[in-house]
Length: 499
Image (cartoon, rainbow, N blue to C red; front, side, top):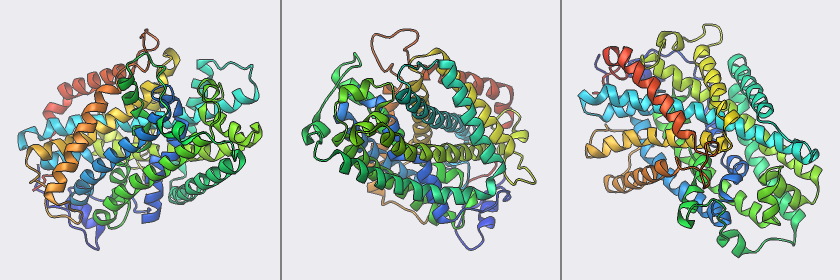
């Protein structure tokens, strides 16, 4: 492996990337606002949280919805602060698998980097599937509210999911030049939609609000698990709403002054997401009306709350268009980021047919082959939906667990080496505070990784089990086979030496 210098921020951003061992291939199209828009569109916190209310309402009720988000938001903010140090020191699209190589013991670099890269790729692909699934469920809810007697078949929802994924692929693949404009618009649309819905539902529902006790203290457990376990399982909703902030890292080679602006964007987007998500969920709970109807509605919890608040089905559907468009932006941005992560990992030889997936299309200026792989695997992921009644939980769990594990790898190795391996950087946390933040991050990830593999309900059947564990098993098998066949002989970690 060639020696490589620590990346220093300066006026020549492409020289900075060259010092990391790669020649610049992607265009720097994204301004700070565009990248913040992309990062916020990926988190899409208030939309993702409201669209996934079905995860926590039966598993802790309002107490899980509100305090679960506060808990997940605080812990993910700690993770973002920890990773921002790595991003400032090593601003490269590989993200976590580069960082773990930077701080690891030399003989462990290949295997730790390999494992982290595969987990991170799997998490981003699963997150594309999650956003597509959330979008399709909102659309299905609209149809169910207009035609109450219509019963959705799984294959019908699967076909809608496939069509949605292909639409995101086409926009990403052939409209790349306008994506920065789309993401700037996504930020404005998201904040505007958040404000508009909050004002509208509060005005329409006045004065028939639920009590403050109900919003902050009401506890419901319909899972069959003990109350404490049920509340912890409800953390999945909060975890989904504030994860995937490493999008900034995987797009870092497309923004100027990456080691200065990247860490700030990473931390700020988590803070904005937690704040807007908490406010929006509290507003929804105040105007929700009868919660039994909300939980059991075929239209889905979010649409049913909007219908209750406005006392008008058409009004509720019109308001739902705002988060539905936000989810389209989210699917686009997550697919963009996923393809860049696959491109970076393939560029370092971490995937089968790496040379093919590491190609940048000469005319489009983007990794089209990596984008095609993302869309293909997302569609395969959706096949879980055809055979499992808990597929919704399984796909979301897979994305949150995989991303969190990829965050834990560099943080854990850095701690094991005494937090002394990172070089001077623009973003630096005082050492004592850094230890506390890292310990909170690792404890949260360890707890939720185990919990989110649990089935959402008891008793457990073949259809209701959490197939997240099956998805992980497939990923492990493929990565192990690839390691034995090719990786152990040819993969040496990122093709740079972090000295």
